[in-house]
Image (cartoon, rainbow, N blue to C red):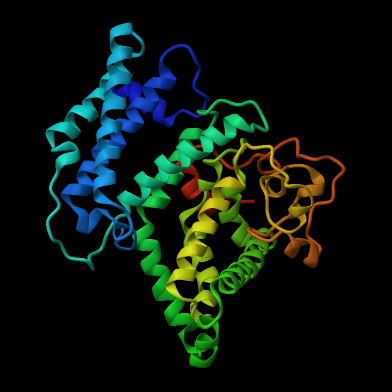
Length: 373
């Protein structure tokens, strides 16, 4: 059973329908999330994100965990009774049973320290559930290309999603240290006072514009500086676009990009409310713009970044190479002369030209240091 589970997690092909694999994987992932949720309840000081745990309702999370356990257990039992991939369903039911034995949704939470090193387990769980429930539905409703939920290479992107979310605490800590050390001298009380006095809608527009200008030039450097391209090629190696594809990002690129994008935000001194709103916007666009949805937004696509705009950035098509760098405002690429010009509405192929980036999370983690190109 363990060998079969390892083979499933390390393979790169899509899951075939009609054999219980799809429902079995759903049940297993849900069971694992329930187990991780129980651990987070037992060790909140070390497994939950301080900024996040003050924002959500614990009672709502308990209800979510309870019904997730019910759903996972029911799917697993149904597959076992019907004789469909019993080994996979047994693993799923095992995680649900273990979660129940550890207290399930009723684990009490007592007072705990608020400034400890942590792994963002709650952020990973909530983001995975929220993103998958919302964007899988949107992708089925407005699909650009017909492809299964568990398409080829989904395991690789899921590993990236897992690691980049779990190390969010380290990334934020390292980013804050770097930003304060490198750019603390540039902060000015007068400028920060002016920024903080701006009306909320104006401040939100300004923070997105400032962040996107930093993102644009950072992103462009990843494409034009060979040493940086070694890191960024990992992100571009995805061959099927969907809500999970944007998670494929080397952890060093994640750290470097966050530092350079957050630096001007820190220097200008935006308020916490504006930064929180910006995080919601960037979180949504990062997933939506990679999604497998047929969305162009008419003339608005020349102003804001859409899935259509960003899909071209991931294309192997000649006219799309090193184009469409913006993350939020498409007009930046038109302003700087890097927007894609094509007679076709959508690109034909995705991935790195030459397809030289290996499949698999660990191989991609080591790729920038082994690549001889």
